Length: 223
Image 1 (cartoon, helix red, strand yellow):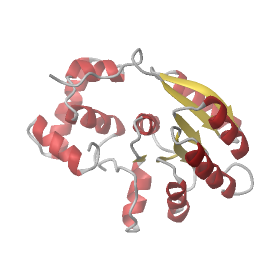
Image 2 (image 1 turned 90 degrees about the horizontal axis):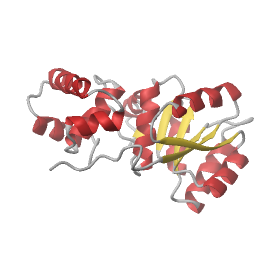
Image 3 (image 1 turned 60 degrees about the vertical axis):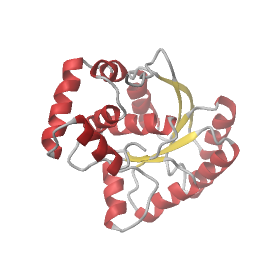
């Protein structure tokens, strides 16, 4: 029997947004408000406000811009402060910066995920779901940059040939969830899940669910 999937009715991911650009906050708000099972519990425009929101609202996931104001130091300090004082809050950095050293500094400070602002929306949603379960995640571009530099990282890497949606379905299939369970969890049709599964097998040159599970484990998508 497969493990029961948590639906929006079973669990709710409380998310906070911290970014000093109004348009970015509005875009994130629209994306998250349309996603079942996610509730926005607060917004902040500075690093100090982000710390206060984490203390007051205790979101399960905090989306944090890496530069709010003149430099990145305030955000890095906020990550360290929040993780140290409120370990139940998982931080996903959402940034336009691609410098490897700076992104590694964010993970060293305690960020659980990193997503670039030009990533596809589904990568951010995957990062939020991973972080809500205490799992790290980097968008494909960041994971590739880390690998290119030979840097070790806490972030899971999405297989380069797969879309963010395919990677999420791969993870759920490998965890033993049924087609109907995955469809309910992601808000899509069961036949769409089947199509994605067949595409996964074709892209990866695999033939069975057992093969998909082994592949997911080898890529760190599941423990």
